[in-house]
Image (cartoon, one colour):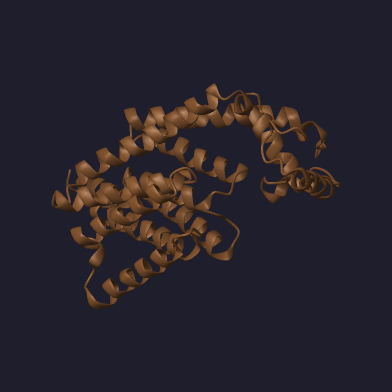
Length: 293
C-alpha cells in the first residue's frame, strides 16, 4: 500500500501543475500581449499608448510585482475601456477580449485571488466567444459557402505551405492583389471579386471544407468549454481551433489571448506547456512582424 500510494502521488505531481503557478504563467503571457499591444497598436491615441507604456514600466521599476495589485488591473481595465470606446467601430476582436481578461484578473485580485471565480469568468468569456463566433459564421452566407476563405486564398493570405500547391500561386495572388488595389475592393461582395483568378485547382472545394471544419471546431470548442472546461477533448478542440485560425488568418495577438484563457482552464502539465509554448510562438511572430494583432 505505501508503495502504491507513493506512486500515485508521484504520478499526480507529474501530470498536474498547481493552479497558482498556472495563473501566474497566464498573467505573464497576457502582459506580453499588453506590451506588444502598446508598442505596435497604431491608432490616433498613440500618445496615450506611450504614456501608459511608461506608466507600466515605472510600476515594474518602483514597485515589487505590481501585476499582483488591484490598482494595476484597474488601470489596465480603464485603459482598454478607453481604447475600445474611442475606436469602437474599428475595434477588432482582440480589444474586446483584452478588456474582458483585464476585468477577470481585476475581479480575481479583488476576491483575494479566488481561482474558482477566475476560472468561471474565463470559462464564460472563452466559451461564449467561440460559440457565438461559430454561430455568426453559420448565419453568414459568405463564410458558410466558403466564399470568404476562397477570397482569402485568392489574396494569398493563408500560410506559406499553400504557395507550393501551384507553381504560379505567387504570380496569381500578386495579380489578384493588383486588381483589388486598383478597384479598392476589400470583400468578396465587391464588383471585381469574380474577376479574380483561382490560385490553384480545387481552391473552391478546399475553401468550402475549410469553412465547414472551422465552424465545427469553434462550435464544438465553445460548447465543450461551457460544459466540461477541464476535459482532455475540450482542450484538444481549443488548441485545434487556435491553430486552425492561425492557418487561415495570422491573428497572433487575438490567438495569444485565447491561449491565455485555455491555460487558465487546465491543470494538466502537457496542456499547460502546450498553451504556454503556443502563446510564446504567437508573441514572437508579432514581435518579428509575421503575425498581427
